[in-house]
Structure formats: structure tokens, C-alpha cells
Image (tube, rainbow, N blue to C red; front, top):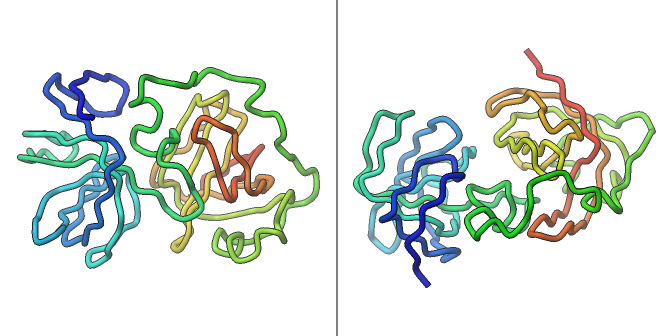
Length: 233
């Protein structure tokens, strides 16, 4: 069902003529990319048609074929970061390996586009069942976590990588998506005002929890909890 809505919390300005058609999948091939602020704009082809799409900033490449989920089509959209106006652009969700659920807050809109079905305020119940280790951290990589998650389950790890997404003040935590060149994973910090930004190179230490589902679309094969971050200069 297509609806006309006005939503002011999406990170970009939507007009009353914006059309929403949620979650339709598009398999597209990337022919051009432009990073701008928190977004990656991609010129793509799909069934011999060319158009522009925008996703949360991600390390996608020209020539790559990916699947995106439709969220918002915008007409005559002006990107201030690019100083460019797109006749038509699709804002879409793109999920990298290890982060499940197109409806979680870590994608462009998530639940917020669906009448804010969840509260983003601190929620003690949201922390029930998490495992926190007091052992020394094991140095490893995100790729290694996915190769043998049982080895790292409920253990502290030390990871280095690039920050590609940050969500502050979500359920009393800051949620940071880290990318190591091959894979991506989210680490939760109990500091809801964690001062890391997209593009930062960081060292993060946190306890690995596996196969967890917090509800509200927050479900993960692997996630780091009770995390601390150090920006690498």
C-alpha cells in the first residue's frame, strides 16, 4: 500500500508529496557511486533501466550487484552535501552480512518510518540476557568472527575497523557499525553519547554475543556489547 506521509526524523527532508512503498526488493548493478555525508548515492541499472539510489554510507563498488529494499522515492531531490539535484532518487535499505532485519534502526529508516512502533528511550528490559565478559580481549577481525563465531562467543574481543554507521541514544546505548574491508558488525556502547563518527578508524573492545533477538527488529547473528571505542589517529 502506498501512502503520502510527512516524517521529520529520517535524516533528510521529506515533502508531503513523497511516496512510500516499503520493502520491495530491487536487484541492481552499480555503475557509479558518490559518497555524501551519511549516504552513498549509486547510479544503478535494473532490467535495462537506469536510476539513482541512496543507501546509508557503505563500501559498495562499481560493477557490484546488490539487493536493496525500497523505502522512499523522491522527486527533484536536492542533496546539499553534493550540491546536486536528482530528478528522481530511491532511498533504500541495504543490509550487509551479519546484520539481520531491514526493520532495525541501523538502516536508513527502520521502524521509525512505521509510526515509531518502538520507543528509543532507555529500556532496562532491553539489556536482559546480554552476556558481559571480564576476561582480557582477544585481538581478531570481523571476518574471523564470522568464520568461527563459537570460538568468540561470550568472550571479549579487540577489533580495528572503519565506522560506517552510528546511532546515538537508541535504547540507552550508542550503536556503531564497524567495517574491516570484508565484513561489518555492530558494537553497542552503554555510553549513549559515544563520540565516534562515520569515517573514523577505531579500536573497539566488547563482548561478543551470538544469535540474539532483542525484538523490535533488533536481531543479530553476531553483536558486540558493553563496548568501548578508541579513535585511531
